[in-house]
Image (cartoon, rainbow, N blue to C red; front, side, top):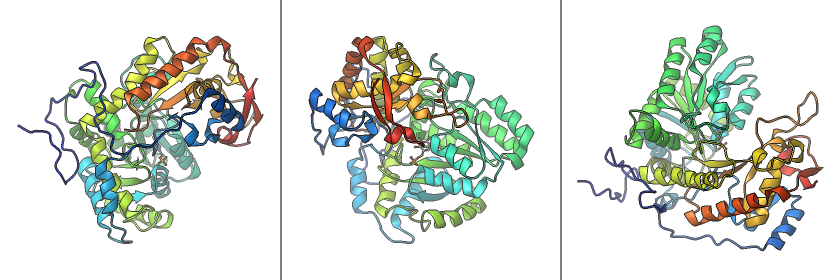
Length: 482
Ligand SMILES: *Cc1c(COP(=O)(O)O)cnc(C)c1O
């Protein structure tokens, strides 16, 4: 019988035997599957200090210094904690310009986990999108996706393409417990491909998990149907793989016939359906920077590499240091381990469950990397033009030094034609959970802060702009209480 002990070298933690289902709730508590070896002290602040800091930042949480934030849930991107194995990898990183050993470690990991023989490292996920779309997308062509992430949409448009979101109808609703809200509407995809063919659609993308509607997973059955549709029409399928491991975990948890399978087998099955993938290693790469583009077709690789050299650097380093490549190679294996994922997804769900059971309106079901507060229902007395999401995010910081991010009217910007505020479907505050950074005690502190604001919600005032930048206003705007 296997002891499940970690080998001192080799490709990271080995998969557990099928049927091994770590259950962090089994004993009624959620124990982190790691020990803390290095600590980063967090400065505590008083409410009065936070009031002054908010005023100085114009009530824009992007303009706070991170050292003034107690628990930072702004994003899960690049904010994770690396393991001792990854830190050790930094030390043995090979900084050769060409043919770096660390590149080959990454290539071996990508081939082993995803079955993709060709990999081009890039400095982050959007850079992989730039290389891929520069190679494949021509003006006027359509690129379908379940839901485009912001940078993916922007890169399609930058090449003159038309990004099209084809998520299933369940994926567009905040409520309802449909298990795979990231699924593609396959009928709509079929109709599109039948109409436009490979001339009009240079590739199909599927984002796992779907970030834009809350980290919602795509089922293996849906990916299979998408893949068959793409093959019938001769259009390549690429996976936006940023949260591939979290998606595989949801498949293993929720999909009939997939229960208890080793995550690595599920990952293999997912990627066997695709022709390539783009990846931000800042998510399920468990690294602080990096990404890659991977694919099967050697001819496509040859074309893509030409652009990669121009945008990112020689194809065995791709804008990264050798040590980064090493950290990513190790991080990918760690992200695909059952113990890690049970805790990771369980931790996010725990936060959601504490809030939901106390009556706090959130987006359901909770996805893999974040809990979304429904500020519209949380603060029903505030109309969209009083920015309920911004007001709630500011109150959370004031309450306990917790930083989330508004995903509502402020982020949506103005309609270029009418000049009015765009009308997003919901007013949300995203609480994204960095990987392996916070413990259950931190999440309890976050839940307590949300509940404290919830208890005094009737007294929460709306906000107005004191300065509104013309583009990407959320990053640099100034606010005050209305
Ligand atoms: C973060 C992200 C990207 C872009 O990756 P960066 O490393 O931030 O450039 C692309 N797609 C999805 C789904 C993402 O979450």
